[in-house]
Image (cartoon, rainbow, N blue to C red; front, side, top):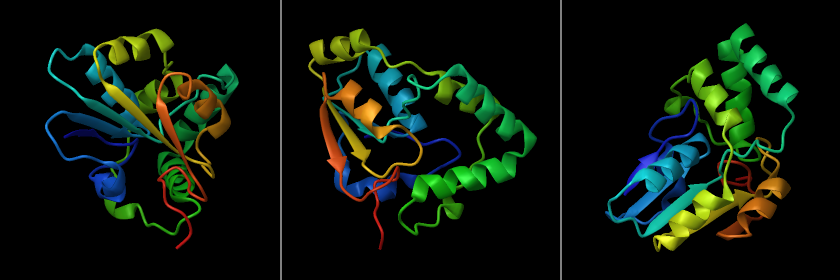
Length: 172
């Protein structure tokens, strides 16, 4: 399996074992990593059977001012921004993400916030025979879950995880 990490994270794929298939023909990503996994699958000429999108970073329904504000806060205090971000990623669980911290860059954050998911690209992957599965936590504090659910359910198998946040964990 080829896996892509979330923003400011590394080696977090263990959190998602129950959703992942460890085989050579699966591509997966978490949050920011879903965008990278999707683009990898889209450009790949190699066999891919399954694309797993775990809490896709979905901000295309946000206003431009939201993106500018996020980038401003990141520049003003990178450490404080990432700490608050990771707290929101782990909510409502008490998962400690500090051991997985790998502070991202402003360019990565901008790419994450500015990315636009396109139905035509999804259809291209489906036409290649790739199964696309999307997992969303209904208590996600990072993205607008309703907007993401509405978008992805048009073309993808989409799962809503009850009482779970962005990292697809609930209260322990």
